[in-house]
Image (cartoon, rainbow, N blue to C red; front, side):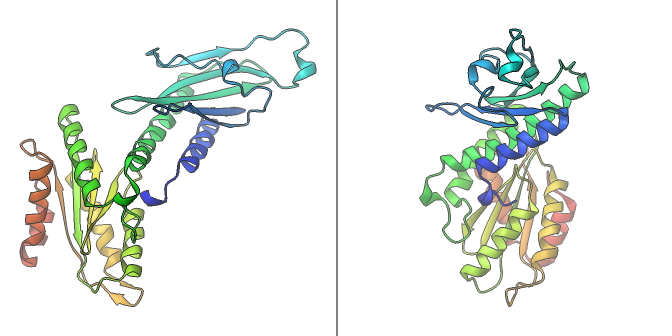
Length: 294
């Protein structure tokens, strides 16, 4: 989905469903820590009788544990209040590279469940996917309304430059790949055309990527933890789709370059190199993209 179409409710609902499926569990829960606000708790399969925070046994935020296994014990008359009380649980942290965002937990009823290593690994994979998506949404939430382009719904050039600066710093700190795709339309620009292209770009990138509208028909796509070849795949997908006629306008072949961050570059020089390569004559552009310049 396009980043502009992402919303917190959809992400959390998907994470709850994927987690429950991974562990064949009766219920799941996500607790999302919000800075300066009450924690946001969302659940799947929990009733009003068992969805209290005090009863869910979440690990303290300060505990650096891989996971916490929960076993519930009840008085003998619990069946009179709840025919299927919680019997077992498993909680793992939802964490980005820089901070802990919250907790993901699974719960089983009827009988105590012995958690396998595979179930734990699967739940951790879901937690990582939720964390990656939440990072993008939280970054967009930080952007003030006037920093989102009104036509495309994408972050504007100021947001893109700030996000590129952060991602370059992270790539250097953690020795990660970082790629960037710069695309410029060569057609009469209308609101309908720009909005359509923005949706196409959103569908061509990963949910962890950040597409932005830079103005005057130019789009930038920040691809964290992506190498040159990954950026080239995005470039080719966009070329195949945008090369067709859209809403009565033939775009021809939009100019685009795919570059990977070099060890001697910062955000400013990285963006400047992409702009220089995009400005090169068309006869040399194909050679540059195909060759790679990481």
